[in-house]
Length: 117
Image (cartoon, rainbow, N blue to C red; front, side):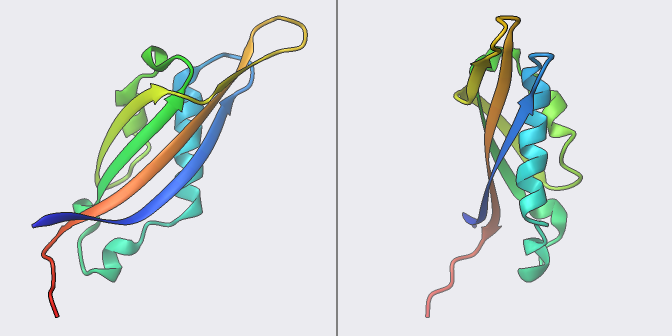
């Protein structure tokens, strides 16, 4: 069996006031999921539990993201989360903090046998 990617989606999420990196990342994941219903499992006659979901999250402070909390965004499949430095922290004009922006790349794959024609 070989892992074959079938879908890649992107999302963006923010934490406007609380500087909550986990919430911004969670919103970015939900944004990516919203773009695609991820019903590709049925296309290949796989159960939804067979979906391998690799998530890469970019935020300015990766150490402040609770990766376990992000897994709760996935109702099925086999998600894994990697958090890297990325996204943006945008300073507020009054100097009272930053708006956190998280970016997500969500890649869905299946273990499939290659076919040769």
